[in-house]
View 1 (cartoon, rainbow, N blue to C red):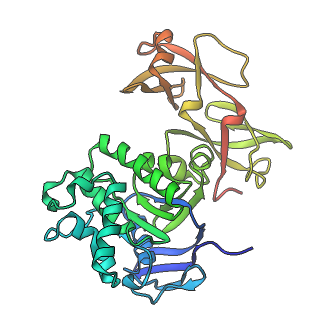
View 2 (cartoon, rainbow, N blue to C red; view 1 turned 90 degrees about the horizontal axis):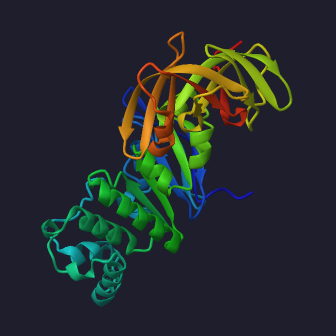
View 3 (cartoon, helix red, strand yellow; view 1 turned 90 degrees about the vertical axis):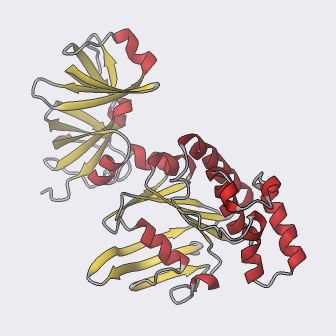
Length: 366
């Protein structure tokens, strides 16, 4: 099997005695939209900068189309970077900014202008070709930066939190622009962000990093529904993480003793390492918990007390406790909870299907 377009093989990065990236191994396929996500200091930007040629790996190898990239300077690679700050030249107007990369490659002036105008039109800003950068809005500057990066038609485009400075309404708009561009062009996008909504809305796969280590790689749905570690479960989404021990185990499911009582979970891919008596972390996404005023016949059901809510538009996050002060979080649409007529301190039943319970083995179990 041939390797991916981009390969990180045992790549590390140290700054003095500080380890920014521990040995990481992953591949990016040609034409893939890959997002690298994590909190500040996790190593995501350092990883992107090593791919861009702005940092040199301390060890390991980065390959692009089978060619070792470690020693190549940034200008020798076909991996332009769209910066968080955009890094547009204030002394050049819009079209001159877009032409810059072509001129550096020795493209003839008329061809530079032709190709740059084509990209300005594609980004729907051709009417601003002769404007100075300081006369543009944040969204317009973002489009200039994208046009400047893409006018050279690179096989890979790198993006370092390019939407972080935009207003939320512009972020959503630019997400659709980026997704459409990537699909139309068929080139590889590597996108660094701290925003889950951005990564999950656009990427084919997401890399979750923490303290220089890759915690999980997968599709947004895989990561959201089946987190591979406690860190991912806490970092992504709104999850209930419940510690327990396996009471019974069979081919298709397991029954666990927990602080909430007995909970049954289906066995999912990757759950084949569990053993009876072993410790587990059960992960139940808040939006997969159902509420009812009457007891049901569900396998996983507890009685809880309503203590608080967080209203964020159409979605409401509800907080409950059982009699032992164990917290359960539930997320529902406003219209779903209105019939329940919840008041502080009222009792209600919560239940969830075993198929929506995912299990993370305890690292130190057994």
